[in-house]
Amino acid sequence: SQAFARCGTLVDINLPSGLKKISSLLFRGCSALKSIEIPSGVSIIERWAFGECISLENVKIPETVLEVEYSAFSKCTSLENIKLPESLKTLGNSVFRECSSLKEIVIPENVDLDFDTNFELFMDCLSLKKAKLPGKWNAIPQYTFCNCISLESYIVGDNVRTIGSGAFGVSQASQRFLTAHQRCFPFNRRDLL
Image (tube, rainbow, N blue to C red; front, side, top):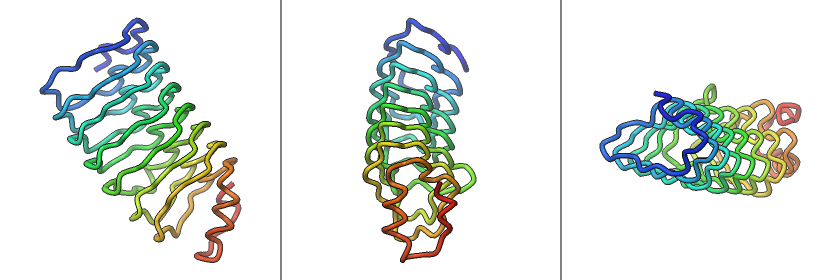
């Protein structure tokens, strides 16, 4: 499954139709890979599939993708924007961790919350300015926006009752979140930082 892993000269690749999954570690560490179009029919992007692809700027994900496993795009430091398909149901932990150029993200409404596996989604995304979590989520998992020092705007549902440890740690949004939501439900300030 690591067929192209650490291939430092791979800049572009055309994936064949008929693929059902992007295997674990398949392109991990392909430091020159700039863009990828995942063919329709793929239903899962497995763990670390594109992790550490530091030149990756463009990713096209089809509506057939239902699951993106943990760290699938972690440390893709050139990735500025990515559109997740509305078909998406499951996101693993740390999917976009250390994507330091990522500016904006919308998690589709169909994505189910698993408080134990959705942690660190955007941790260390230093350029992240805007984020939208599904309205049905009743929690913000731990370390979701930790070290997102540029975060200015975020949308969470009215159902949020739990804020995981470090969810907004060190982000500019932590104080605004406290101010805006402290009257809505009780929580402990130390859980945010």
